[in-house]
Image 1 (cartoon, rainbow, N blue to C red):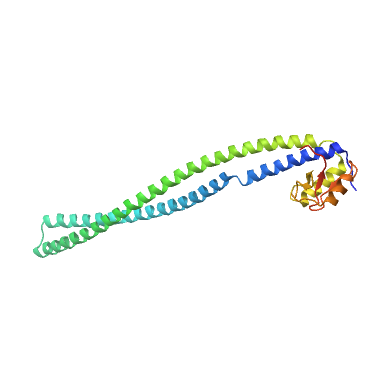
Image 2: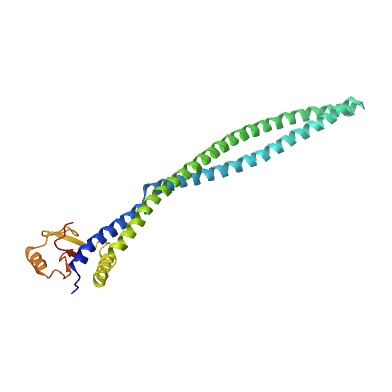
Length: 244
């Protein structure tokens, strides 16, 4: 049977209230709605970064494709210009006729290559627009994430400040309490979800909110004031005659 001074038993209720508040603050810190917001923006930012990376790859590949298309066109044009120059410099009729045929063929080839070049340019323009949109989205989400993280940090700071105050007050309230009483309290807190002590209001345990039968209440009230009594229903420490 555990005994403790009546004043210590009543002060234990204050310790419990502070421990409960500390639990609430810890829960609020871990489950703050801004954490979900930060996670959601982070996920969207990851998607935007992947989209931007993919768009950069397409732009790079298309630019290289355009460079090759431009080189192909330039090569055909240069050869056509050389043939034109050779035609103008004179030569046998056979040579001139052959050069004329080649110039005509090169003109058709140049026209086809220019169409390819135009098509690649159009694809590059579309790819660059996609990259610009992806980059803008990435930048916007980066800013949103930074803002949400600042909001969360500020909210957590407020909770941490209160938690520090609660811890200091709890240490003060628990200082000097009966060692046996505190050992029982700490053990029950671990077993009963953090709520180890409650007031007895009439026939009701404020821990489990159940009404005790009259014989149990009579037994509890008849026990010496220094005796630490427990709820018959939930096993919590009951504080009799509390004004809380």
